[in-house]
Structure formats: structure tokens, C-alpha cells
Amino acid sequence: MAQPRLRIAPSPTGYLHVGTARTALYNYLYAKQQNGVFVLRIEDTDVERSSKEMTEIIIEGLKWLGLNYDEGPFFQSDYFKHYTDYIPELEKTGGIYRCFCTPKELDERKNIVMAEKKAWKYDRKCAHLTKDEINKNLESKKPFAWRVRIPEGKTNYDDMIHGIIEKDNSEIEDFIIVRSDNTPIYNFAVVVDDVRMKITHVVRGDDHISNTFKQIHIYRLLNAEPPRFAHLPLILDENKAKLSKRTGTVSVLAFRDMGVLPEAFVNFIALIGWNPGGDKEIMSLDEMVKLFSFEKVTKKGGVFDYKKLEWMNSKYITNYDSKKLLEITKPFFKEAGIDISQVSEETLFKIMDSVKEKARYLKDIPQLTKFFFEEIKEYDEKGKSKFLTPDRIEHLKVLKERLMNVEIFNHDSVEAVYKAYAEEKSLKGADIIHPTRMALSGKTEGPSLFLMMEIMGKERVLSRLTKIIESDIL
RNA sequence: GUCUCCAUCGUCCAGUGGUCAGGACACAGCCCUUUCAAGGCUGCGACACGGGUUCGACUCCCGUUGGAGACGCCA
Image (tube, rainbow, N blue to C red):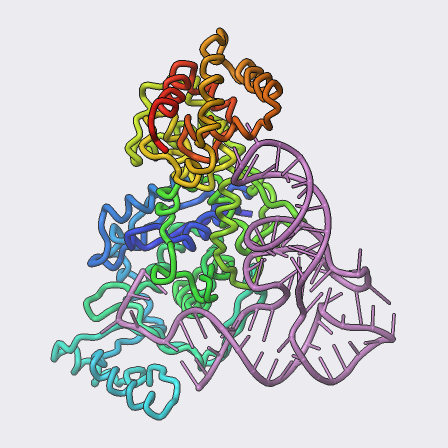
């Protein structure tokens, strides 16, 4: 069997859609698993709406996801003028014909039919024009489009996900493949490209099923063997409608900018509509390549569940290597205006580790660790009244004195001081821990206190305690 | 409206004729605990409906209902 060749063919609309990303992923998984080739082709036949920047964004998104393509990017626009090369041959066989109906005429006839609540389909007005009529139109320079002549019978194909799907040809209209300005229509360009690029498997969204019937006829006219088709269920929004820009976040890069890890995102979207069987959920791209199969792809559309993404992301953050985590989080510190350049890398790793399992998104991390890097601007109001009471401040005074005498200032030594003091005064650990936390971070929550103190270092701990003790903050 | 696709907890998935219908997210409670989070445990919660086929249907067939998608000289 020939080497499988798959492709992702997005149109450059300005962002990489979540649905497109998942389609790309499934294409990628199958291609890799079968030792095939994964091709990127940009569908930019709509020149008006396409631009270099938009293409860049798509490439950036794919790169972020780690879905590296083997060939491309190819641009439909590069081949633009060649699509019509096929027309003379197709005309000879009678498979296509000129349609002189203007869009306006079409519209009028369509409205009449629709008014009767009937389904509109091109009425084949130009399908049976005589040679003379055609020549007359041609001579008078009447513009025309090319339509495919759909024969009687049925059209069917064996979908890798849905099985055999069939449609009566009477339901397929004589559709246009070339506009009156001599440019190709999507359905035509796709098939020509897929044939040229020797694509063996077309994997795309469910919403293309109806196009597939039309495209099969183009393959027939081109005398080409159709590829295998796999139509993926759509990704839905909370209202179970096709996920769109209007109803939620659909841009892949927007998730990156929120602080979603690419591994988590890929893992998450893979699971909308696919699962290797059993309970396995957390998987790397490589594992998915091994496990993937179209038999296991669901037929039902799946809702994009932000809560689950959030959970999965937090899981990935927790398990991320501190060094990698720091690297990927740096932009978020910058965005939050927090300068981390004065802190040693070793300390930064510790800081990462201390909040790893608390963050849902990377953008949470700067907020969670802010107090390590800058002076406290405000103290939590509730925490102040609850923990920074006069009696607690008295304790802090003593503790501060004792901490001053600690030579090796680390988690264990600091803990020893607190334990001893609590025992001495018959206090609960919480009685002195919470006030200290308030003094050091201004917050009532955060990493383990003694770890926090170790990370901050003796000097800073003492100065912040002093600040609380000496201020009339209450 | 026509055609096509689809139908298991609120959500994502397991299930392929005989299961107490399983897991995950979410939600609630409890435990652990220096806080938050994490973790552990428990609970809540589904086979859309109606006919068949079968000794036996969530599973197979038909219909109904419901949902989605497509019906462009867009992609």
C-alpha cells in the first residue's frame, strides 16, 4: 500500500480555530502512526480575506501545539491560474456545462421556489442549451460559470467513522466549480489539490459530509480514485451548537495567552470525540500516536468543557518540570509587570515548585508569587483583623528576636523555632503561623509557611516582620 | 422546508446480547492539614420514547421524538 498522505487545510481567517486544531491533531496522529506524511495547505482562494499575517498565526498555532507538518505550507493561491486547465477536458466529456444564469436571476428563481416552501436546487436551465444557444451567448460575451452535470443514480462512500453514507443524486444539485470570473470554487480546488498532492485520507469535520458527495463527482470527472474519508464530529459550545467565535473562545492562541500548556491543550481536545478505550485520560502526543484509531472516534459531537480543560491544565502544571515551567511562565511575569531578574535561578525553581499545584493557568503564577519579588502593597483586610491582633503581634516580636539568632535559615530550622515557641506558650501552630504569613505575604493563603520563609531568606523575613510590628497597621 | 448525521449521568468518555451500567470533570459532604490548593473517601447523577428480533436487550432492526450540520458564482 502506498504511503498515507494526510493534510490539514485551514483557510486563513485570522486565527487557528479549536476545531481546526483538533482536526489537525487527528490527521497528525494517523499520519505519524502509519508512517505517513502530514501536509499543511493554506486554502487562500478567497484572496480578499487572506493575508500573510493570518497564515503566520495558523502556523504559529500549529507549532505551539507541536503538530509539525512534513510538507508545506502550500498555498492554493500559488496554483490559482491552473485550476481551470482541467476545464476543456471536462467539457469534452460532457461532465460539466456552461451556466449563463446571472446571480440575480438565480436569486429571483430561488425566491419563488422558497416562497412555496420547497427546497431550492439549481433548476438546470442551462443544462440543455443547444450549441446555437451557447454560441450566441458566447458571442454576446455573456458571462458564464461552469457547473457539474450530476447523473442519475446514487452517490455513496465508506466513511471511516460513519460507515457507508449514501445520497440520491436527485438531492445533489448541478453545482458550480468555476465562477464567471474564471476562478475556482472551493469544492473544485480542494479536489484538484488533493489529487495533485496524492492525498490518501481526508480527515475533516462533519460539516463537510454534504460537500463530500459533490466532491466524489469531481473525482469521477477527473478520473481519479477518491481518498478515504473520515468525518469528525463537531466540537460544540455549551448550547450544543457548533463552536463559534460568537459563543466562546475558539482561538487556539488565546488559550496559550491565558496560560494553558500546549501539552494539556492537545491532550484535552484529543479527548473530545476520541478515547483509546478504558479510563486512560492523561496522554502525551507520542502515546496518542500509538493508541489512535478512527474506530475509536465517537460519532457524536462533543461539548468543549472549559472546566475540564482547567482541571487538566492544572494537572499538567503540577507535573511540569520546574525549569520548563519557569521558562514558559516568564512571559506571564513580564505581562504582570513583575521583575524576576534579581532572583537567582535556583530560588526561582523553588518558587515555581511552591505554587505548581495551586495554579490553574500560567497567568495565575505571577499573582500567586508576587510577594516573593516585590514589597507588599496591601494586606488582606479580613486577614488583618483576624490574625494581626495585638496579642499576635506580641508573639511576632518574640519570634522575630529568635529568628535573628538562627544561623542556617531554612525550612527545618525555622520550623524548629516555631514549634518550640508554640510549645512553650501552649499555643497552636496556627496561632503564630497565620500572623506570620500575613506579615510576610499580606495574604491568608499561599505555600507552606516555612518553605516560604526559606525562599525569602532571613533578611527579608525579618524586615517584613519588623514592618508589621512597628507599623500601626491596625 | 429538503437532505445528511447523531442520540449512555449536567459535561467528556467506557460499554459492542446476560454488568450492582464503569471512569473523569463539575457539584455536595467527610477526612487529611499551618492557609489555599492538592490528595483520599463517600454521595448525587444516565441508557430519549415506542415497537419488534431474542430465552434475554443500553447493545441488533424499524418508527417517533429531540438535537446538530449542510443546503452560496464562501471556505
